[in-house]
Image (tube, rainbow, N blue to C red; front, top):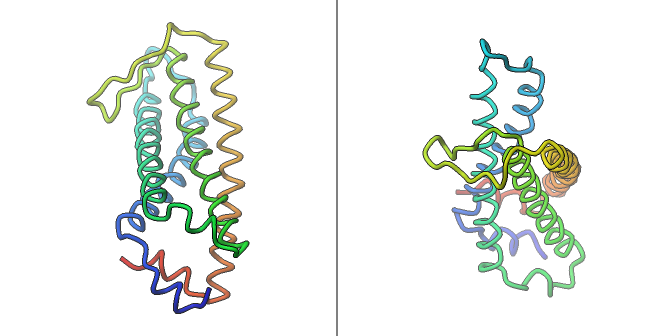
Length: 183
């Protein structure tokens, strides 16, 4: 595909905006998780971990909603257009996005389920209490916590590839990067 045809194929403004909100939120979640897990365990006198953990969960659930929205927009906007394209890079881009969407969903859902079985309630932006799926269960909390950890590491690896591809397109100056910086 030529540079001109790539630049003419504009992404919807909402897609570009959601991309950058999602990207910044995911990086915040990675940074905040390392910070919150380094905090000392709470006690009766020190309950300061509640706010950072609740904020992390709120952003995580919001990221899940954004991811579902972006996947729906991508499906509605593109259909099978990129999959039917003979260009191998287009197919890799579709696969990259699919894997990222699945891993983001896995991270968010496993984190929510871990929290659900930890005995700590989850309130969506301090307005809507999300259901706990059962009573506190250490085994299920550990299982979902492990799934959360490994899905997050896998997401970090795929994000590294995604950023590498963006750098490649920036160096190649093929016009693709311009699509993500225009509103």
